[in-house]
Image 1 (cartoon, each protein chain N blue to C red):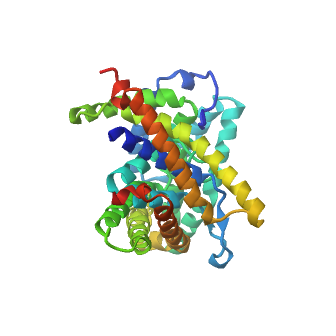
Image 2: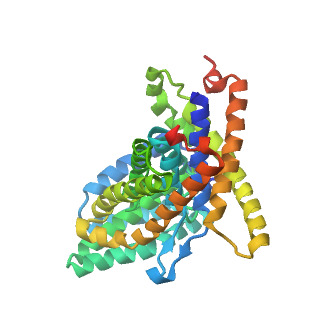
Image 3: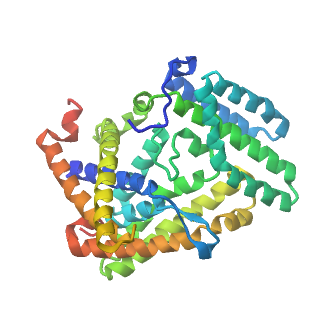
Length: 184
Length: 203
């Protein structure tokens, strides 16, 4: 079944890339902070694929970006993005997807909507910021507190993505139950 | 192929990818130890000079800094507020130099060459009985899937627009996921029918 796994990993990596091309939405009540759909793909990869394949899907995506594919939101790509202060978030992505998949698997008795929401929130927000904030602090020579304040503007948008992830997981589970690979 | 690579024939294009990667890695390590803002000014001049050596299309690449302006502004503000203004200037100059240098490798190296240069890093996979060519196959699959997915998505969106008048909705995501997963099952079957990914390694 290893080939099937490889195809699924590549498929979710492509999904993360495709979501990066969705134009950013500026939500007025959040002060117009642009929200991209890309981390939605990271959450979905973990929740749908499970820990190992989800993490690998994000790694494969980042590998393509490093090779020069302009797949990050805003058409960015290449090695340059790994030299920006947001590199910590990029490192957090595969680990976040792994954790999301792991939680998804260990709560497999739970209602899929709740389980996916918890997984996406802990993996896609908690873990990602756990790496992202120190990354900003280190690259920009700021204190952890300052870096956290600077990063916090994106959290409301990420919460929206958690809700969408949960709704998508539930709808897909209804339409194609076998597609929730984290639970099969 | 979709890539930020710039077509060209400069000396940087001719330099082997591995050498460029090594140079940028060493430069990043060294620049992280530098604490003085003055060191970065000549570095910045050198990097911009390298872009200039690619001709006008090279210099046009510097526009990638525009995407960073907002972020760098906030950064300087945070440093200024906490009384470390000059440290902020140093940090910003270092970031600009590092980003430009790393980007220079990407715009002058074809994706194939870059993949070729990092392939040796996947050799250890073979100790675990996994072909080192699987990551490369994964890359090829993603590059094929991504445009297909965009196609499916725009078809779904057109239908949705015709039905509701609204442009975009999260409701497009589940059908997108389901349609694409069906497709990926077909690809997996096709791959197996051709001997699987291990078969591709020629072993």
